[in-house]
Amino acid sequence: MTFDAEATDSRAFTLATDLDGTFLGGSDEDRARLYSWIEDNRDSVRLIFVTGRDPEFIGSVCAEGRLPWPEYIIGDVGTTIARVSPERTIAPIEVLEDEIVTRWNDSGARVRQGLENVAGLTVQETPFRYRVSYHYDPDRFDPVAHDIVADLGLDLLISDNRFLDVLPPGVSKGPSLLRLLGHLGIAPARTLAAGDTLNDLSMLVAGTRAVAVGGSEQPLLDALPATPDILRARAIGAAGIAEAIAHFNLHPRSEEILSDAV
Image (cartoon, rainbow, N blue to C red; front, top):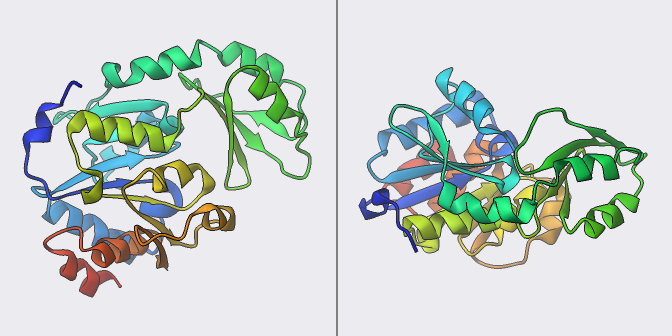
C-alpha cells in the first residue's frame, strides 16, 4: 500500500460529505455555521467531498467562496479520486484510479449506443471520464435498461428519482472512499460519511460513522440498516452533519458544534 504524506498529520477527524442536499443543504445560517466551524478547526479536521459533481464544478464553487476548499475530492459518483493542492489545483490520484480505468474499459460509446432508444432516459452531455449519466423520468422509464447495462458488465444506479448513472462494476462512492482512506492511513472510526440520496448508500454503509441528514430521500432511509454507527438526523443538510459530529463526539470541540447548530 502506498501512503500519502498527509497521513502523518495529527488531524482528529475526517468529514466525507455529499454536496447537494447535504453539505449544501439547510439554511444559509446552518451552512455558514458549519463551514466556519470547519475553517476554525482546519488543524484537526480533514474535509473530503464525495459527490456526483465533477471536479470542475467543485473548483468553481470553492473559488467563488460558496464552499470551503476540501483536501480531497471523490467526484463523479466515485469514479474520480483527486487531491486538491495548496495552490487550489485539482489532480486525479492515478494510483487510486487505475482500477477504475480498468473496470470501465472505455465503455462510454457502448453505453450510449446500448441505451440510445430506451424510454425515460436523456443523456447528459457532460464528458465524464468513467461514467455515463442520464436524466431519468420514472414515469416513462423502460426497465430493459437494467438488462442492457448488466449485459455490458457495468453497474446502474438511480438516485433522487431523477438521475441514472452507468458506472464501472463495483465502483461507487463507498468503495472509492475506502480506497482513499486506506491510501491516507485514516481510521474509518474517526471518519463521518454524510449523505441524503440513494447514490450515497454505499458510502453510508462502508464502515465509517455515517449520517443520513434530515430530509433524506425515503429509498435511502429504507435501505439503511439499523445500527448505532448510522444516524438518521433530525436536522436538515449542514445542520444534520453538525448534529452527527456532536452525536458521535468525533472531535474535541464537538460540544461547540452541538450548542451552536442543534
